[in-house]
Image 1 (cartoon, helix red, strand yellow):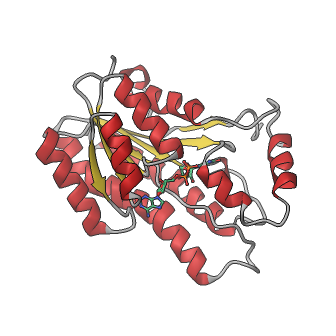
Image 2: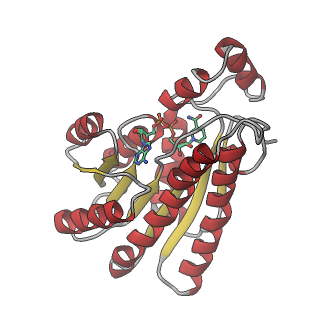
Amino acid sequence: MELAGKVALVTGAAAGLGAAAARRLAAEGAAVVVTDVDEATGRAVAESLDGLFVPHDVADEAAWARAIEETEARHGRLDILVNNAGITLMGSIEEMSLEGFRRTIDIDLIGTFLGCKAALPLMKRGGGGSIINIASISGLQASANLVAYNAAKAGVTLMSKSIAMHCATTRTGIRVNTIHPGVIRTAMLDKVMAQVPDPDALMAGFVAVHPIGHIGEPDDIAEMVFYLASDRSKFVTGAAMVVDGGATI
Ligand SMILES: NC(=O)c1ccc[n+]([C@@H]2O[C@H](COP(=O)([O-])OP(=O)(O)OC[C@H]3O[C@@H](n4cnc5c(N)ncnc54)[C@H](O)[C@@H]3O)[C@@H](O)[C@H]2O)c1
């Protein structure tokens, strides 16, 4: 119970990596605020963890203000923020519409920007904390058919370093790090597979780029979330933590 007394907010926590992270943090004793646009599933996850659910679109600044207000009203503090909510739209520069590009940037990049901005004052009042931004190996290396996602996740990567630098040099006690998962089996992966004509070939390709011989599971990422959330990582800030079965070696 290393996180007893801590309060965590996890976005996009109704499913996939967010739900796994919320469960892992709760198992270590943190009080967890679950947020998601998917109200029914998000509420069920929150109830299973004895946590608070806040309906929340991360691309909406007013919704962020409400999420932080509700967190403060319930718990009085915020120690851990996991900016996890995200979407993946496949498409090359020739295929991607401006609308799809903007939507990806709005949710994956601006949603993370808004989360950091909204959470900082409450975290500062509590004397510090840990912000964990879920990027991707697609924030470190390019794919021809991920022009929008590459742009958004690369943005999350360097933006997080900027915020880490600010928080460190202004002595806020807040650490900011990114996690870069390889391909992980979640609903997002199913949505990506549904966008291509030959999903089996895509999956075989995913496995082939992971030297370890298989894709990952949500708990592989939840372990890194726990590490970055806890004082075990007290000297780690501005870091890009790659959890990818060797995909970027
Ligand atoms: N699954 C992978 O292979 C993989 C790999 C690298 C990075 N990631 C990143 O991990 C994060 C989680 O991915 P996942 O695979 O668990 O996805 P998922 O689709 O399984 O779950 C994402 C959750 O975010 C929610 N969501 C979507 N848009 C939202 C919005 N605007 N506001 C609030 N909630 C919203 C969805 O309702 C859903 O519950 C994403 O940022 C994704 O880019 C995933």
